[in-house]
Figure (cartoon, one colour):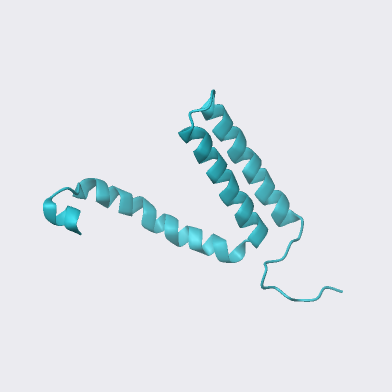
Length: 94
C-alpha cells in the first residue's frame, strides 16, 4: 500500500497481472482438490527444478527447462494413471 501511495505502482501492469492471475488461481484451485497428493508434489518439484535451472543460467537452460517440464508432465500423468488415491481417501477396494 505504501508503494501505491508513493506512486511507485504501474496500474496498467498491475491490471494485466491481475487479469492473468485471477483465472489462474481459480483454475489451479480446482485442479489441486482433484489431483492426488503425489501428482501435485511431482508437478511442484518439476516447476521448482525448471525455475532453478533458469535462475542458475545453466548451459542450454531453455532445453533443460523444456525437458524438466515434459518429464514432470509425464510423471504427473503416470501418477494419476497408476491409481493412487488422494491422501484423505480411505475407501476400501475389494
